[in-house]
Image 1 (spheres, one colour):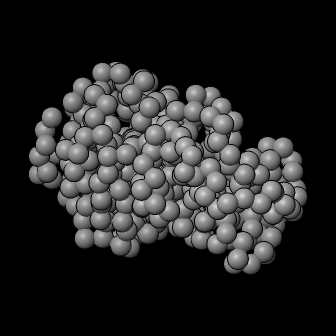
Image 2: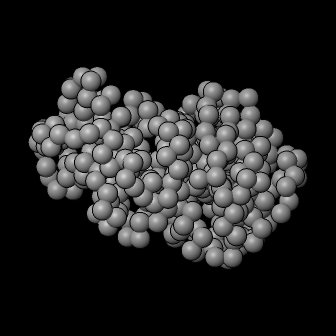
Length: 347
């Protein structure tokens, strides 16, 4: 592996030209790296080439000329030191298959996608390891934490975590991405980092529903706190360190997405709370709200593992079973009374 941090020599590819992928590409380009950015839409490629702006997914943000947009996956990933993958979670399997032919065995693959696959219940690194099976597991890294794309692109101070089973790889990613406005910590818990990043989207839908109903601030605080308990239940069952879920990728990201109007998942929930139907909301969105698909994954995974996730279960009931949001609140409030730590320390 080429461990150089020389901006003139380090070879970086970014796969995914949505708002988050574009923002991270800009972050790296602002540091001086020249990089290839794979985008799906030909019109996005043309906009970045001609106007240096991704007007479809990150409007109002000028992009440096050292971002080279492409629709050619080989150009984006071949002979790269780092490949950053930022595609919707339901696209990860297909994208990994497309990348496999061209990627180098010593490449570090960083995923900033947040979700759990519906059918297999695999995390993003597990999908990458399964498909690109010649990449050592320690060369897979997760970048996650409380971070809205537009704020990162506009140099708003942001703090995230890079997680890998290899401290060397995590620190390599840390140094590559860190700058004056983007601070990266490291941890050795990719599982917990990904569970936090996925589940917070489900809980953000719940928070949005509360606000859409105009319920007030007390319910939101309760939801965030008990949501963190559910995150710990599922995460520890899957081998995560509870401390990871108390950190940036867990409670940090949970707080941001449950309270920030820039969150697409929160916005979906708020509109549902105001009476709109899910199909109508989704049809009006160009960008993906990961929490919708992840709700199904988390629900089915919790049943498979025997983990009690009352809030996530009620979000599933609203999204996919037609239950009214008022009824879900009543069901949550009228559950049998328990010790606060029931199910948290038993896993």
